[in-house]
Image 1: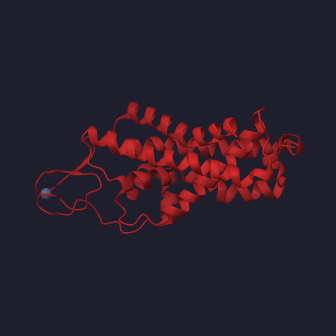
Image 2 (image 1 turned 180 degrees about the horizontal axis):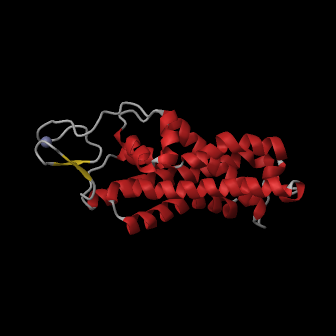
Image 3 (image 1 turned 135 degrees about the vertical axis):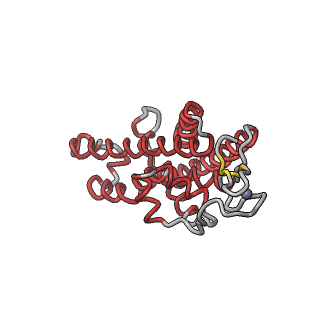
Length: 234
Ligand SMILES: [Zn+2]
């Protein structure tokens, strides 16, 4: 085990998520019942390690489903733009729901398999973890990308309407300065998500190089594959 709680009472090594010592039942940390959304998002900026560790500690992973659905919408919204930037096929609103189903069909199995593989790899390395924590930390680590859907998308839609997605004409021609600014913020939010992926691996393993590689692979699988594969297949 690379990351664990040492019991102050009997010195037993306990899993990171554990509330009580397996040997003497002493409390190892404060109890976290629910994820407090306000303090979670606020602390994500100040203390990302503390914030994501609380997601592991939380008994109820409330907001998980809402965050997961918003993440799915985010991946879908990137796929709009990728379709229109790549020269192969433009986004056709006639096929809106087919495109959406395509994203679900790719994203859902990748997300589940990735979480399960990480869980199994860490178990093999000797870490005691829970699968539900893996699902939750991947979802909550994507909070910056999710914030773009909640905060930025309405602004983009208000300023550019469907042109933001159709690129016909391109937002860079319509309002060049604002388009670059918004794309810049979108890029920063995605980079921040990548960083939080690193954080969630590092919390568990305390290994820097492993966490960087694992974060890059996970980010590519979750944001790249569900977008690129449907573009070429349909
Ligand atoms: Zn103990």
